[in-house]
Image (cartoon, rainbow, N blue to C red; front, side):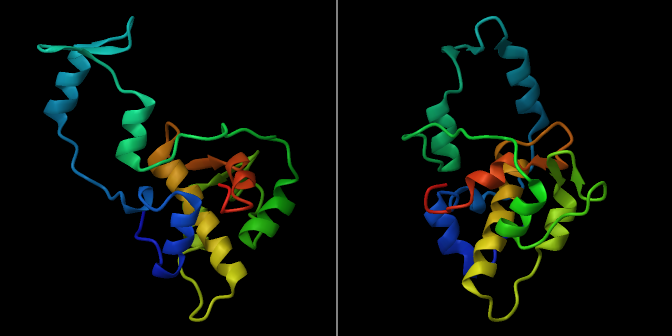
Length: 165
């Protein structure tokens, strides 16, 4: 993800995504990955290391990404009028087929559409830009799909109130 606009950094913090927004691309060590793959035991979901077995827990992920894991579970309906939801929360309606595929939005289209804020944005524009940025974080860094090119709009509904996100 590109660096967030400084004017939405506070909103990212309020929504709990401030630390995740600081994640940048890093070089993947192929040898390390191969070593871990060789030590993975799928039956027990653990790594077998010379010092014993270990596994990755939700707490490990939360500490690495700076995401809160305490509180209510993230749940909600997944059937919405996607055009209306996008217009209300993002400020635009993605064209069906070109950007909106079923109930998912193409990430590249979303990024291209939300690159820059005006010089003096309204609070509404800041909130809309922040929601689009968080969708990019979810799809690109937190829970990417196999191709890393789309994000389900069910997450957008959860971002309606950024203070509760």
